[in-house]
Image (cartoon, rainbow, N blue to C red; front, side, top):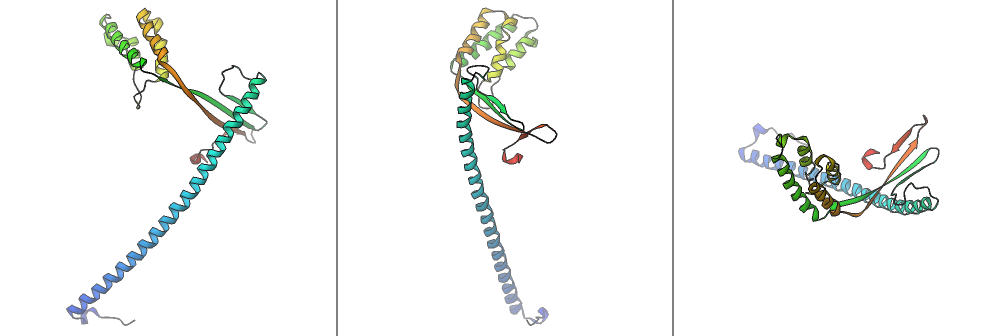
Length: 216
């Protein structure tokens, strides 16, 4: 390749040379961009393919596990191995492997809870008006804090359950009537079954097996 002395070029030749260099650089940049986009596309498609396969197989495993766990739970019930008839979970193990099944009922409050909430707020306002320490009263403060709703705008079942425990503190038929309305508004929508696994190591210690992708 012949070397070019830029100082020997005319203005027109310099302009043409810059144009050629610019074109060459653009072509190289375009080539690099295409190579990058190709690598990016391959990376995404390879990962997506394996993720979908992983999710599909994991779901199949969970569906299978749910069925065989229900069958085994029926066997435990038949042999009287459950503590309660309505028990949702159980634990079984051999020398080095443990399966823990935990069931939780999904509970929520219906529209009657909104009425109970309003009645309770009105009741607490009357309560602080009749007490000298007013809003500083610890029972009032606790009751109001338990009425806080979560991010979804729902009442928290555990918090409302703690309100029931305050019946003896208020010792008032009106408060008890409001709590009964909360109890009536509590409905069960279904159950959630979760599975946990543990394995015993060489030191005879049980360790959790975490199937979660980010814990592997």
